[in-house]
Length: 158
Image (cartoon, rainbow, N blue to C red):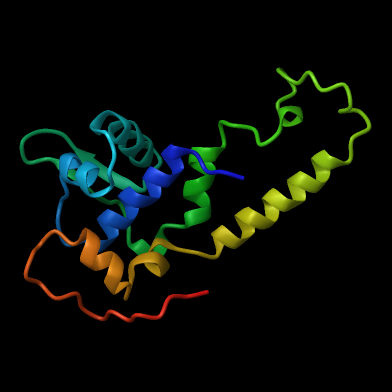
């Protein structure tokens, strides 16, 4: 299993905004910090905005920030937004399915159970779980130089 680049970038954008929640962040600085092209980031920011994960303001003083508290942003929901367009298997897309085994194949239901378990695990994670007390992440993504991260712990949840 492999996540799309858009999903990966969406989580990076949210983590960036979570680390820098006290300010509006510019797309260019997020793109640089997340090692992404400005065009690709713009597409991801748009989807995050229309799905109410972030607010986005255009213009010279514009930028992005979290639309709600990091504790209220569910990672499973984010993954569903970005992964929903692409079926995991060919047989999950009835309009384009060409598999001759679909009527008798038991693999489809096993894959669906695995995907349900995958999303169930992600549903138990919030953006806050990813950023709060994560000193390493804060050090990488924090904008304001010279500020010490507060309430950091080096232990990472398993």
